[in-house]
Length: 404
Image (cartoon, one colour):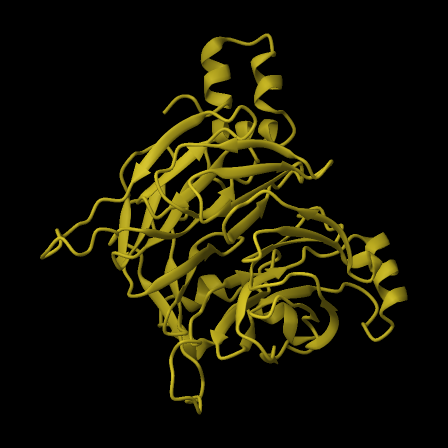
C-alpha cells in the first residue's frame, strides 16, 4: 500500500481442522512472529499448537495481483527443496513466541557441539512460552524439540532474543519476573530480574542490545541494562496497565501501549516522554458500559522505523506515521490481540482471540536520505552523545526525534 491508503486484507489463516473441545478458552492467538530473515512465520493457533509456515505464503492464500511482489524468493528455494509447513504440539497453551536471529559462526559451532542432532550450518530456533511456565526451544528446519527451560512459576507471556545472534533469550512471566537464558550453555539461566509487582506482559530488547524494556500490569515501564542486568529507570506516564512495548530499529525510540488508550513515545536514554498517540473511538458507544473500548493490546514499529501499528479493543488496526499525531490508516479487525510487521516491510500480521491470523498490506515507502542518515547515526550514538556533537541545534533536534 502507498502511504495514506487503507490496509487491504491479503489473507486470513484459520486452524485447519475443528478441535475436539467444547470450550473456546484456549483458542486465542496470543503471538505471531516472522523470522528475522523473513523466511518463516509462526502462529500460536490455540489449543497448544504452533504452526510454522514458510514465507511467502502459497499462492492459494493470496488474492490475485499480490503474488508477483511477494514471491521473489520462491525460485531460490526450489533447487534445494522447498521448506514444509510444520505443526509443533507444545502440550500447553502457547502464549509467547520468538525466533532467534541466524546465529553467528562461533554460535553455530557451539550449538552443534552441544546438540549433535541439529544439522550442520545455520540453525534457526523458535522459542515458545507456555502456560505452565516452561519454555520449549525448537529447531525450525526440522521441527525437533531441542531444549526445555524450567524456572518460571507461571505463564510465560513473552519472549525476546538478543538481535546480535548471541542466543541470549529473555522471558517475561506472570510470576512477576523476567529471566535471562543462554542457549549456548545448554539453556542455562543466567539472571532473574525482579521488581515488578504485577504480571509481566511484554519484553523487548533494543536492536543495539544495550537495553531491555518490560511492561507489566502497572502504570510504569521498567528499563533494564542488558550489560549489567540492572534497572536503569522506570518510565512514568501511563494512567493504566501497560501491556506492550517496542523499540525503534535504531534503538533511539521506545513505544509503550496501555489500557489507558494511549501509546507513549519515549527517549529511552533520557526517559523523556516525546509524544502521546491517543486512540479515540470512531463511533461513540451506545452506552457508558464500554469505558475501555479503546484499550490497547499491541504496538510495533515498522522495519524502516517510519510507522507504527496498533491493535485495540475497538476492533481497529491503526497505522501511524512517526511524525503525525493521528492515524494515517485504519482496518477493521475483530478481537485483535497482537501485531507484527514483516521484517522487509509491506505486510502486517495480526492475531485474534478466535485463533485466526490476518495479513494486511502496510505502507511501502522509500526512506528519505535524512532519515537513513539519522537511523545510521542513532544505531551507535546515544541521545547524550548526539547532544555533545558540535553541530547546529536543529540538526540535534532532528537526530534526537525532537522535531515533531
